[in-house]
Length: 636
Image 1: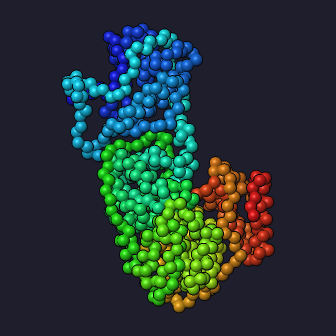
Image 2: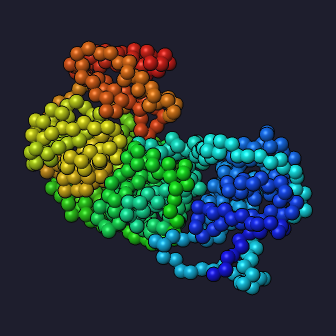
Image 3: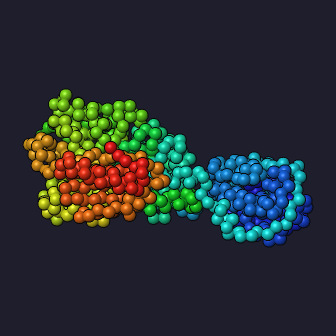
């Protein structure tokens, strides 16, 4: 087939043309020097990247350049414009390329107009043959005008001959991450991706992340991905952009709509599609949002999430045209829980959904289980008008405590914004920390399955060790973070896992992912089958004086280096040190922990001891350690 000219500019001379290949095999750039500059073009420079564009842009700039002062700028801008052309030929465009020469910026603005043209297709997308035809020019003349014309009247200027010196370093400099990419690197975190709407995450970023996820899925042999989104105000728009990005990588998308995160996890465990992305801000403030990623049945962790950012840095994407369809798994998920869990006697339960996405699911589930349900803040509202969507913070449970007591309910349950976390309140109005719930679940599971493993994070009570061991199980301590807990469960075949943040994972009768709704159902099953109140059941377990999780704000960029220094500086005697996630120090009468938060620009601390006096002594030891590392580090 004849070549098709996508864009032309200027008048070619009679000298030999130079063709430069682009990353896309279907596109190339051809340069024919005009008579005005053919005598000045340096021999050999055409073998480097896009020489014709350099000459053209210098002319457009209308400025005479001296080679000695500008060669590096020209070379760097050549690389930038070359990268942009490669993006455009794949159907994409980066709005944040910073050129240092005005002519390059001008050409870039013209390239942007090519973005709407279909990207080149890979073999895997099985495209139909498409030819671009000009209405004004017969096909044999191979000329198609895209509105990218440039003035032919601008005079070319004299350019001194120069040689490309240290070209590798120029390429390296030009290919450094743009300020735009550098500014979002921090949103690629240990267990998920999360940023601030309008600052570090928007639809363009979501689209690029979709391309990265789709490309990574393809490299793992995964062709299809599920996509769901929570009830936050910006989640539908982010999901739409994400889906566009995934489909443009050649992957197929099954949009399951607005659902709690456990519904997406359930779907990846119970359908032919084992990969998926949940658009959610989880328990964070209304202005936060992001993505939880599952590929081939496993949540991505740490370096795997960093690898997605690396794909953005390197523009390392596959291209294609994936299909997009819809499906509904919510009712199937509700039915699966109701078939699995039996609540032997009716319980009166207050359910606080915190205006999160579980509001459309949790009350129905509890009704099916036979509970007398008192719904609270179950209207889905992404602005979270009643309280922050994090049930592990006591201040967010005040209304639930009051409602449980005023309604004389058997217990109350609070869920976070996407349904992955829970907390509970007893009939007497006592807030139950998730690690104490984990003790109750461990007793139930290990007593029926002697020798089974139970995974818990470094923030959990030390009593979990003795409880699990006492019933014949094996306790395994793990890094904090839902992805790390799930990974450790998979690695050890543990039947139960959980963390202080309220993410409880059951592999016993369930699928090993953090699920606040299923965990709530299992809690009701235990209470309903025992004949005792939740207060009485918990009274059988050892208790210590403990703090909630304490947050000390620090810069996101320094939190890990601070913890590294803390670990190196610590000097305690007659203690047990655990350094898998920050520094946990176990004393004879209690323990303390300081670590870098996976989800916030903060250090998090927690303390537990046999008495108030011991607790204060341990806290003081940590205060002294933190001040030694950085004088202004302190906590209440």
